[in-house]
Image (cartoon, rainbow, N blue to C red; front, side, top):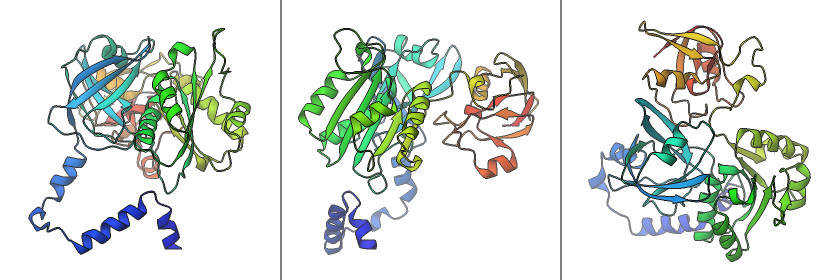
Length: 385
C-alpha cells in the first residue's frame, strides 16, 4: 500500500532514481556541518530586498511589476504563492500581499500584477507613483494556494475573477513551460473583454498545449463577443467542465465573485474537500458580513488602548491593523487575510469581530488572541503589543 501511494506522487520515480545514484556516489557534506540555520535562512529569509526592474501594462486597469533581488538571490517558490510588499506612503508604513504571476521554474525575478481599485491605497501608489529602480522590501514567498500532486490530483479546474488570474497565471506558465502531464481548465470571468488580463498569452499557450483549456466568461459583453456570458453559475460550470467527479477546483477573485462561485459549486455538489480558495484581503464592507451586529455602524469610532498607555481612535469598519499603521504602529504580517497568524495579538479587554474564514485557533479563542489584519473593533478595546 505504501508503495502504491508513493508512486502516485509526481516525480517520485525520478527522485527514487536520484537517491539510488547518491547512495552509489555519495557526496561528502561534512564541510557543511553546522550550516543548517544558514541554509534555512537562505531558502526562507524573513525579508527580501527588491528593486523594481520593469513595468508592463497588461490592460487599461492592470499592470505587472517585475522585481529583482538587490542581494543577487531570490528564494524558490511554488506556483500560486504570494509575497507581501512593504511600502511607505505619506509617512505610513504598510504592506499588501500580491500573488506572484511569474513562473517558479525561474527565480531571476518575481512578477506581481496589480489592478486599479476605487480608493485603493497601496494599489494606487504602485500604479501611479513608483518608478523603475525604486527599492522595496517584501516577505519570502508564502501561502497554501498551490498544487499538491498527492492530494489534488492531475485534473484541475481554475475559476478566476478579475485580478484573481494572477496565481493561476504562475501555475499555467509552469504547466506549459515544463510540459507537465496535468489537465487544467481555466474558467476566467471578467466584466468586459478589454479587462481580460494576459488574454493573448493565455490564448497562445492553450493553442500549443492540449492539456490546457481556456474559457472566458464576460458579464457585460460587446456585440462582437461570442463566448460565454453572464456569471459563473452552476449550470455554466456543468456545461463547460462536463464530468466534475474527479476534478479539484481552485477559486480566486474578488470577494463578491468567490462568495457567489462557492454557492454555485455547492449546487453542483462539489464537496468542500475538493475546493481550494485564495482570499484577497479584508471584505469591502464588513458590516454586510453574517453576524455583524446591526447596532454598530462602520463609521463608529472606538478607543484602542495599548498596554503601554498609548491610546488611539479606530473605525469599526476598518481592520484594526490599518488603524494601528496610521498611528505608525506596525505588526509582523504576511497574508493580511487572517490566515498566516503572524500578527496574532492579545486582546486584554473589549470585543472585536472576525469575518468568516479567519483561521483562529482554538487556543486563540480560549486565551483571547485576535488577528488584527481581520479584526474589527465592536467597542473600546485594550490590546497587548
